[in-house]
Image (cartoon, rainbow, N blue to C red):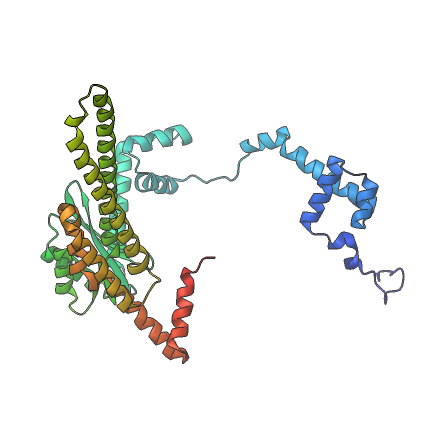
Length: 392
C-alpha cells in the first residue's frame, strides 16, 4: 500500500526552526522550574520564550513527574531489586576464594565466614588451602612461560618482609611486576642470579631505574653490563623532605623553649629573681633564631630540589647541574648546625648527582631525535614539551 501524503510534499514543515525545537535541555529545565515556582504566569512565560502555553505545561508536567519519582516509595524499594544474577559454580567459588585471599587479604576463617554468611555455602579449611595451593601451581606454570622481551624500562628496589629482603622488579610502563623474590641476602650475587634468570626469559631493558644500593647495582652489572641504571629520584627527594621536616620540628621546639623561659622570667620578676634566667633566655633566643633560619633555608632548598632539579619538566641538563651544585654547597655551609641530618643528604646529592639527573639527559636526547625526525627547530620541540607543566 502506498502511503497518502497530505499537503504539498515540495514544501515540508521546517520544525527545526521553531523556538521550542531550538531550546537546549538546560533552558527547558529552567522553564519547567519557573513554571513550577509560579514566578510568572504561564502565558507570560510562553510569550517570553516564544512557545505555546501547551509546551510550557508539558515541561512542567515532565519536571513534576521526575520529582515524584525521585521521592516515591517505589524508588526507595528499588534498592532491593536484583541488579544481576550470578551462576555460582564450584569454579566460581574457587576463583572467589583466591580473590578474597589475594585482593582482600582475608584469612582462612574469614573466607569461611564470608561464604557462609553471604552465600550459605560451607567450605572446609583444607579445601581453601588446596584451592590456593593449586592457584600457586598454575601461576608458577604461567610465570615460567612468560616472555619479558617487551619490557624496555625496569624499576628495581628492595622491600622487606619479616626482616628479610624481597627483591622486586616492575615494568615502568605497564606496572607489571616481573620480580618478587624473598631472599636471605640482597648482595650482588643474589641480585645477579635473579636478573640472569629474568634474562633467560627475554628481559633485556634499554635502561633501569634504581636507588644507589651497592648490591643491587653490582648485581645488575653482573647480569647486564651494557644496560645503564638511572638514579631513583624518589629516595633523594624523600630524604630531603625528611630533613626539612626534622629541622622544622626542631625550630618549633626551640620556639617553645624560648616561650617557656619567658613565662618563667615573668613569674621570677614578680619576686625580683629575673636575673637568674636572663643568661638562659639569651641563649634560648639565639638558639631559636638559628633553628628558625636553618629550617627556612633548608625548606627553600628542598623546594628548589623538587621543583627545579628533580622535576620531570624543567630547565635543561646544565642548568639543573648548576642548581644541584648550588644546593649541595648551601647544605655544606650549614652542615655543622645539624651534621647527623644534613651530612647524609648532602653526600647523597654530591656523590650521586649525575645518576639522579640521568633521566634529564635521556629526555633531551629524545627531544633532539624528535626534532630531527620532523626537521624542526629543537627549541620549538622543547617549548612544546614544557607546555606539559603549564597551568590549565
